[in-house]
Image 1 (cartoon, rainbow, N blue to C red):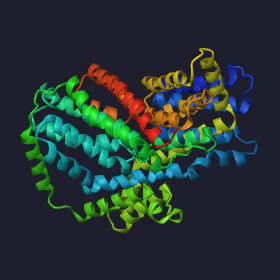
Image 2 (image 1 turned 180 degrees about the vertical axis):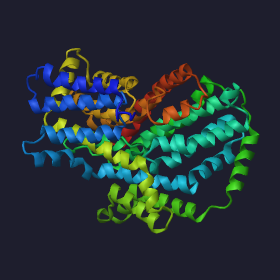
Image 3 (image 1 turned 90 degrees about the vertical axis):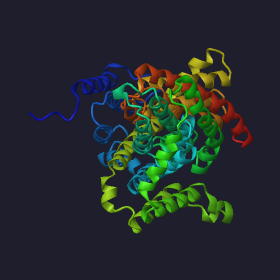
Image 4 (image 1 turned 90 degrees about the horizontal axis):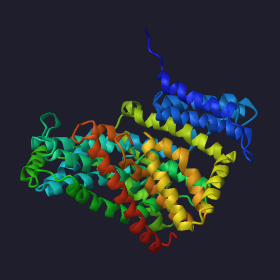
Length: 488
């Protein structure tokens, strides 16, 4: 018997929630029926994503269909379907989709593994040094690897497992405590920090940019360079602290690892000299960073500004022209096409919830509730930031979480007096830091947790402690750094 295309229980819950809001809950005063009905569908979509009723791309196709069919955004069917498909033309969505395609070159050429083994050959004589090597490798790859799962789980994790195995640290033998547990946690906790450091380091970051721009009528539109500069100092500080914190939290039994450096050198020898593909990939990597950072415009003037999405298309075109990637490679990059699909659907729904006034209404409700406590803007912002970040215990998707909560929480914070740029950067950082919390927080979590190096309790304990450390770093060091930069 053929299976259904959805999981019945989570699907029933998602549909039930939508119908309940649509038909049973009265439309609040100040909210249009169209906005309320779109909210009903939006809640159902988020519930279906959280409950994994269907793959996120499939849920998104249904969301597009429902918006077009119900006409909640426009009276005419032709205009309704245009609205439903409107976000497929968003440059931010294509920036991430194309950048994921580019990152396939790092995997295909073996450049990512070479970078990991190179750092370990240099700094791998102590376990702590291996930890920093993994973190540095993750940081170097982050700007051009928008799939944080591919970066942490697909590139760095196999390198980490190879090193752990060379020390006979294997969960199946009960020897994970030798070195593997520590390295697995460093492997994972590098991921949220690097994700916070670049717009192109994780797929939901452009969604953060988009929601913040809409909430401020484009007064604040974070460019690739602005985001990277803002997150540079707190990001580096968090990366410097993280391996140390985890080292004291779960100290490895093996602390001296002279063989690791030798093992990495042997792996590099096996790989041989850099291939033509690796050299081209490295060159294109450099071109992307120069253009994304706005170097031509800095040196030659505004006439030489290159848009971030255009830059991504330049990188992909060069990879195709040089033969490093073939069109078949692009067609097989399912995560890129999947991301473009679900991203477009969620951005579309969030955009029209904003246009129809629902986000404004909800943020006013939040603002009014917090104002009654008599808090100043600093206390109110802290409360909103903490509530937003730790709500991630209830989410298995950073995208669903950001889409559901960021717009309203950010708008409420601004209305309560928070400096718009300061609060934007804190919310942006929190949107990645929250990935530390659970074994289902983002796509990288189940990959590394599933390797068996830590228990559930150890993972959650490390996650909570690292969330506190990272948030403190971004609030304190970030706050001062952003003041120096004149951002608030």
